[in-house]
Length: 250
Image (cartoon, rainbow, N blue to C red; front, side):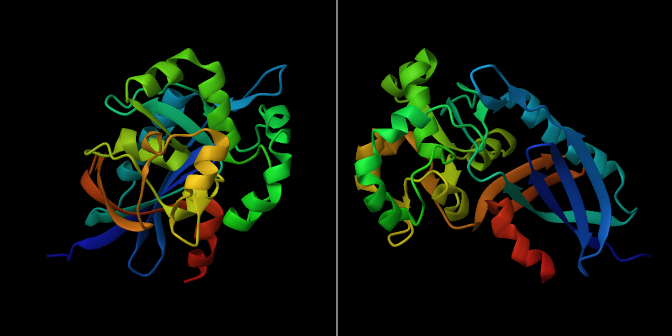
């Protein structure tokens, strides 16, 4: 009788594709699945992904990888790495998207952000980041200013705005958590690494309500159970794509 092989699922959601990679205890790749995603660009310079298509691409990548598992393999844990500065707005109670997934490349609120120029030094001191529309805060502000559904959800106490990783977890996990890890939270430009929390000063500056943001937790955390064709798998790590790179070398 063969011993069960413990396997680990790594999900990588990038700007061109969603990938599922399965490794064994020795770090050897034993199965993969990949689905491309579309990046939508318009004449105004907006750069987006369609939220439902992105979630579907992850589910498809997982399904493909699970069909390729070794005969005696069982996935015992999963991790997720994503584009760090991409963000989305969604309903807290249903998980329904209220905005596109706005890409980290998108600069749609650059003109508004220029009005915060006098505060650039403070922002950099708090976050370590230069003031730029590539990060999430100005995108969140744009959604509040331009999307009626986002404003209505805020008024009803039913809004979450946050990193792409938080939206994915809310949609794919059994407990539909509204959580954020530090690596992705940092790229909102609302995160204070010194306190490991959202900065009250930055929230006020950008006009973002704390209650509209995910609850911050550590990257390694009991995020919830991920449904796969091979059964429920605990998601135990969430981080950003570049933040995960050093761990690829052991």
